[in-house]
Length: 475
Figure 1 (cartoon, rainbow, N blue to C red):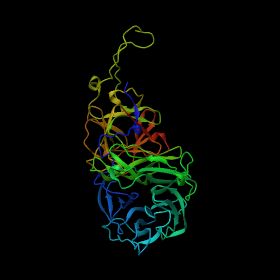
Figure 2 (cartoon, rainbow, N blue to C red):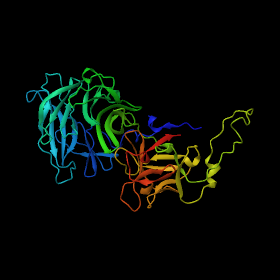
Figure 3 (cartoon, helix red, strand yellow):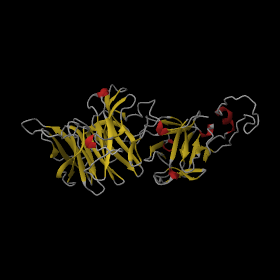
Figure 4 (cartoon, helix red, strand yellow):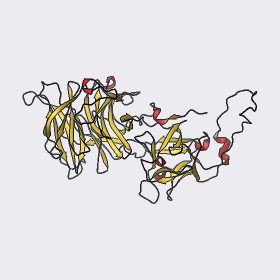
């Protein structure tokens, strides 16, 4: 019997593209990814940043005046707030400072593109136990705006900002020590502080890793799963270095929709890209009240299993029994014990009809009509954080496709048509949403669903329903 492992248990990938974004995703200290007028933006240390038309293929071109280091960005109402930090020249200002700018758009080609003059909103004086750089922004569920800043040269601090002006309200509070690039997020009654721990700016020698603590208050205390306060060295690991990608840091959350979240970050050194710092994204999962990093998707052969019943997606063809003779119970108990081969495609494909073949959901037997090859396609536009895939029956060109009648079928050969391209998003509970790029005859977004134990179809995605959720088990 083939070994089944949940796809999220795999950390190794055969292709570079699945580990980091594709194109020219070269950036250090990326801000949280922000969508503006159908495009995606992130800003980095220095000037400018990256733009993506699809959220997967990135190139330079984002514009951010002011220079400095480690910016962050957030949309508030109909405006975009961008913050960054600088270490000022002694004699002009002492210490490090966080500056804020507003803009109506992030598109440098728009006639409305114009940043306001920067204002000094937080920082340090050069003598205190805080280096006032690496700002991170969060809008809380109550509409209050918060800024976290600081590096491993001292404390991370949190201060409230006026959401209309970005100017500080009240005094900053120390919340963590010996980490930097802080970012706050809120989930289900808890505030979470994501911070980067380890050595910075060392490329492939970086020990950067992302850690997290949580609190019922935005001003802390932030403790890890063992109750250790981050101000005393606590912090639960979210993500560290991975094979050939070193130094994970600068967390930024991106909510795709209810039940689907991702986070951006950089690897300080990518060994497959000259050791350069690259933008990457992962699914953001939640388990027992804690954020968990999803694993990058790996092209390969899978069973596609419904969360509703645990049955697998399969071609609606006659199930050909395996010819092994009578076994089991006490029959042939004295016969030799040998390993049996899996059923082979050539043993059954001649019994399948020509043309389109419909689908059903049935018990998993690891037969050829249940084996799906899922392949990432980097030669077509992707989506936020990932590439569209083709899904074919293993050993054939027969491809999964959406139909104009809002159903799913398989066609004899993959053509690359939009209804044959599939978006696979990992949900916050670890299962998957499988969605065609387009459904013929409608602009409505529909996903693969189980309308009953044995019937696959297309329907509106419901993150609360097991009918909309699938597991991918690797063969």
